[in-house]
Length: 226
Ligand code: SAH
Image (cartoon, rainbow, N blue to C red; front, side):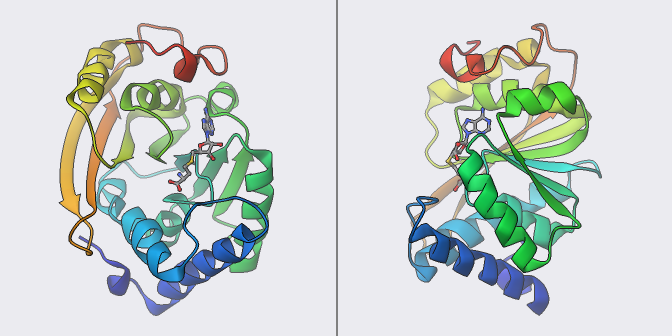
């Protein structure tokens, strides 16, 4: 597992600077509930890097982080992997702040933002992405529906989860055929504080969805397929 300390000094510096800028911006705009560097290094930076393994084992190509908020896990993963990255969030205000942070970090060549819902992006950039991540956005079945039309065949959806009820997994398994997504891995781990449980659940775009996707904006979350 790649930890923060395993990254180059330059990468560490960029990730640290991103966190500082997020904490600074958070004083005036509500971006994240985490407001100290120590908490941020654990719950934003370390947590984001947990999925690097899954990101690296996805097919090469374009990466999107859905519901990126302040840029987690998207920015640390973009920096650590060097992949071309699109950070997606429906909240325009957050994306304006993220745009200026990306500029300040000098990442604009590799990292861009999309201010809008994932469903809308899926209409203009169908099947363009090799890998997608999502943390604290929605239930697995919803993430599968949102990611499917954006992914190329064999592309991966990497879901960051804390506690996961059996029911959520059951629903995810149930919508596999409907969304064209197939479970490929499920990894449980503890963060370095020894008490924060995480689970990384990965799906692959395996077949044509049985439902026409994307559905109308908001439907995936309001009226899930399971
Ligand atoms: N991933 C970040 C933020 C999680 S909060 C983190 O873990 O810290 C969830 C974010 O998802 C919010 O910023 C919200 O605006 C965004 N969001 C919710 N539904 C969305 C959708 N359908 N498309 C794009 N963004 C969405």
